[in-house]
Image (cartoon, rainbow, N blue to C red; front, side, top):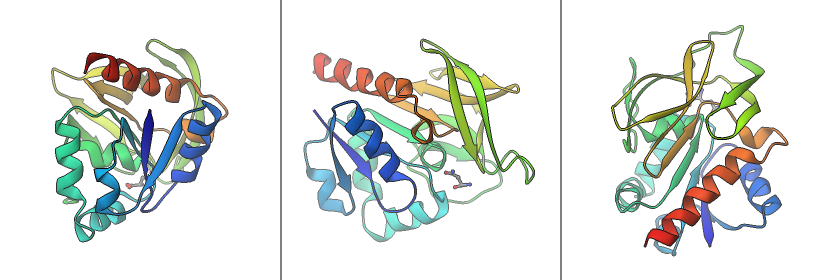
Length: 193
Ligand code: GLN
């Protein structure tokens, strides 16, 4: 099994550390050719969604990534990664990969709450620590989307088939459980093919 970590901008190193801690092989996706490698799963990290979007287009990676995700390769997006996987962003024209039937609000917690930590209940895992950094939240979900975690009445994690997103950064905590959850999705997907 090999996971590709999108490494154009943002907090990709932290995801790589989590994967290493779980004994999972990974490689960095830095250019379009890297998407041709046989990847069993993809992680899209936090960072600045506008910058990552621009780079994906400039480097001719957007279409290729969309195609790979349409074939059902599991993907895990955190924070900016969540924004990039959404079909719609509130009051924003950033081009997204548009895989998931969710509407998101960027920088949704205001200035004072720009960064904060909390504990929340994650469906199928239990209570986990969560770190939010100028985070988005999910404003609405389509009928195929399962809500996995809400905090302060806002949806902060969801899944649609092989797409998993969190508004928070599990990779900035010591808790491996959300990454384990994703790796299980990848294992299940390999088993089904
Ligand atoms: N505020 C960033 C954006 O809108 C996301 C922040 C993050 O990924 N931690 O892209």
